[in-house]
Image (tube, rainbow, N blue to C red; front, side, top):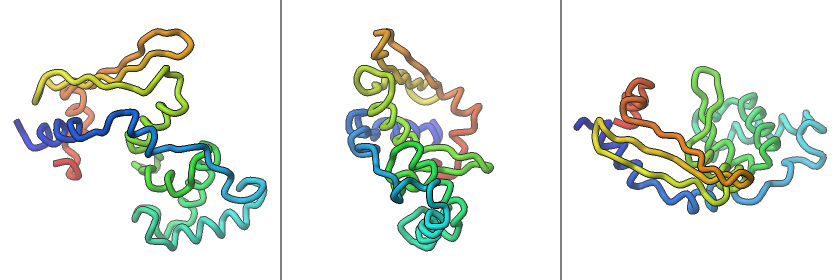
Length: 165
């Protein structure tokens, strides 16, 4: 077994239960950052974004980038989430915004179409590892699930990221 497999299994084993993620990652819907919302006052919104860009409390990939912080503020307002929480959980890959898994799971658990939090099932180890996320639809009662295998993770190069090896 290689280091990436060990790290993936460790990450899965150390992932908090979905119910814990939901309560810590999302919280109640946040009020707009500015009275009337950001779009109602773009100059002040940009000043706020510039303040965030100058702060050490935002991730390094947003520091010194007021335009990116401005877009993150717009995304926070659209999602009804706290701006700092959005900035702490957004990732940018090749110019495309993505989200940390814990944020997405928390958002799905709090606001998604499921009756209760998402649950996870793991099977196998090493190269035969498979993780299935599943939840019961609130309206249909049908169980919806998606499985990711180690082979899929390797093909997508998730295991070759230096951050995880």
